[in-house]
Amino acid sequence: MQRYIVITVVVIGLLMAQPFIPWAESADNSVVIKMATLAPEGSSWIQRFNAINAEVMEKTGNTVMFKIYPGGVLGDEKDMMRKMQIGQIHGVALTSAGLSVFFKDIDVLHIPFFFQDYGEVDYVLGKMGPYFKKGLEDKGYILLGWSEAGFIYLMSTTPISSVSELQKAKVWIWHESPMSQAIFNEVGVAAIPLSVPDVLIGLQTGMVEVVYAPPTGAISLQWFTRVKYITDIPLTYIGGGLVVRKDIFKKLPQSTQDVIIEIFQRHLDQLKAVTRQENQEAIQVMEKQGVQLVTPPQDQVAEFKRLSDNAITQLVGHTFSKKVLNDLTAHLETYRQGKR
Image 1: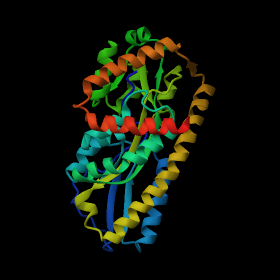
Image 2 (image 1 turned 120 degrees about the horizontal axis):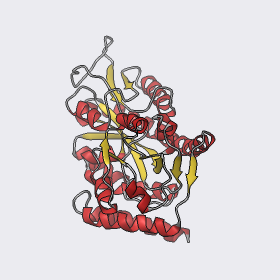
Image 3 (image 1 turned 90 degrees about the vertical axis):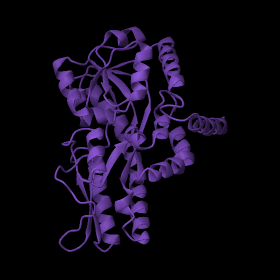
Image 4 (image 1 turned 180 degrees about the vertical axis):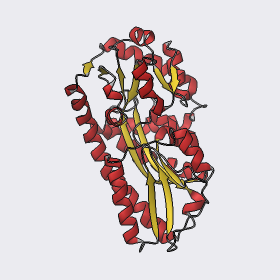
């Protein structure tokens, strides 16, 4: 289940292909910050981004504006991050898996079965968010705000309710996912690496039979049109965030920086609630389209978790630090004790 992954789904970025100088000014000398995302035009994320941009323009007197390039036309997260690093764009909306490429300790958020519900997610990120934000800034990126894709589920063309069934299937793996690769190896799955834009073709041709995504991601990427089953257990949480290059952002006056960050985080907090509701509704939509829910027996859920934990043990100190794992585990235990 290995899900862990990264999926990436819903958030992320896209952008412009022409060479671009680090600091862009329009004809009227206003600053234009170019952002990329995989989120399709018309989605809740793009609608929210347009609202963010309108408020930024209003509160900065039209001296700063954001331009978004939606739809994944430049490939997946790896492609967009590369374009940001070389200056073709200034920022991207990334899943937390993508953010962990810049600051690896963020990868700890993706441990399968780590979070049981959104209350735990919100509490832990409230405690650890400043640490992750500083880690990104130290690497040269400013986090404008946290977002999320939600919990990931396995989706497949054949029912998957046990480890043995997963081992027999053609399973997709995001091609830049060390954690999911380690988990698949532990489970005994020879996964097939594909970029996110290629997954739909893989499903259409039978190259892959099992994918994983948040429900809204499966719909926006049209994967749900090619799957017949959803394994009805949340596997792992995938957050997200918008980052902009520090060297670009810090050229703005401090007061303008503060205004922009406040606007982004306030809107993204609101978007989180929308995303969570839409993920619930997305499962209902898929069921109406004939996709069936498959509930694994508890002994198989326990086996998935055991294999995942074995793989994670090998990654501690490599994919993420032991300290960050201990800190998050401590915060999570504090939260759970408070609920008792």
